[in-house]
Amino acid sequence: MTIGIDKIGFATSQYVLPMTDLAQARNQDPEKFSQGLMLDALSITPVTDDIITLAASAAQSILDDEDRQTIDMVILATESSIDQSKAGSVYVHQLLGIQPFARSIEMKEACYSATAGLDYAKLHIEKYPQSRVLVIASDIAKYGIDSSGESTQGSGAIAMLVSSNPRILSFNDDNVAQTRDIMDFWRPNYSSTPFVDGMYSTKQYLDCLKTTWAEYQRREETDLSDFAAFCFHLPFPKLALKGLNKIMDKSLDDSVKTRLKDNFDQSITYSRQVGNIYTGSLYLGLLSLLENSQTLKAGDKIGLFSYGSGAVCEIFSVNLVKGFEKMLRNDRKKDLENRQVISVDQYEQLFYEEAHLDQDGNATFADYKTGAFYLEAIQGHKRLYKGKD
Ligand code: CAA
Image (cartoon, rainbow, N blue to C red):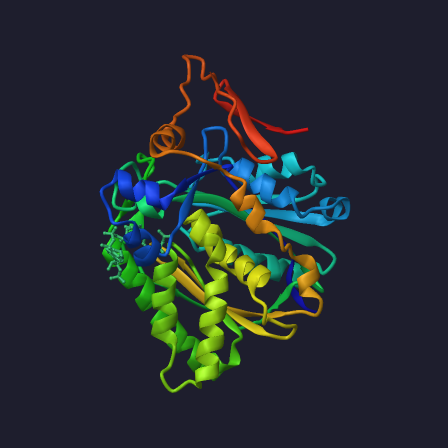
């Protein structure tokens, strides 16, 4: 029995901030963002979009009635949660109309936890081959106006349906994880934005990659020539490019280097337009690769590097299955082009608007553009979500 990803969906906000405008407003050279970070635009959410609406919209785009009847676990991976107690997946389970006898949980370890979610889903399906598990990575990356991380913000969700006999890719049993207790990026409960030691975080990302890749190679007796492509956690694409160059052995055949570099370029196409989506960003890279590469074929092996600050990382591989291309879209760039372009002033208001609660814990909101779901109001401190007809 093979286990892997049967469907992948994606949702992001309906508003977009071009990096050239942000550069101008912050007195930066636009090429610092377009070449130095390899970012062209950031997805910006209004107050009526959050990790629940993004997660539900991403999943809604892939689920059919049979999925809703057979999913028996919903895992939501996030580091921008809306509640310290209730799992966001409980809202998502209800919004999607999934059958009631399901387990719904939320997982956290910075940008890494969706990978742990996939690992748990795999173990569950090994035991219950008829079941399906919905793993969703949903986040809003918000660092603060004029902060050092402002240029690497973003928002979005990736939904992955994990099943036996998957139609996109199968998991290989080759996961190698690493944990190291570091303070490169963290968000205490009392802060709405993270603390980040930017330069240190990039060094840790690259060193975690190098050392985990060395251990992976030792255990698997492999090198990059066995891979058609390698996807990386994408806080911003330039860091992932540095990662690829770090593990690219100089002795590799030129054709292998070209293949990996070409496929890397396809894997960053969406992130360049969306920015960092934390837990989902590795999987947005995977989706971008699968939907844009012209060379991938069934049987190809793809490596994945997941990194969550704090830090936990993991390298593992997947294999594409026959007919994978039929499960993907070829018009997703249009969705990104259709987002409403906003000015820096509008971004500062939209992205940083807070719910103003009255003394009874009620708040209403203006009518903003969202995907298939939106936060309608807060009543008595309870968040009320609605689907659009
Ligand atoms: N033209 C072309 N390139 C230029 C340029 C210009 N005019 N000016 C600068 N650059 C280049 C720089 O040389 C640099 O590239 P190299 O690293 O290759 O030298 C790049 O642009 C960025 O320049 P700076 O380092 O000066 O940029 P910065 O001070 O704005 O900081 C950052 C960048 C540290 C990533 C900051 O945006 C940040 O703190 N981001 C949040 C933290 C983060 O994303 N960390 C990643 C690892 S942690 C993680 O992965 C978890 C997660 O998701 C957060």
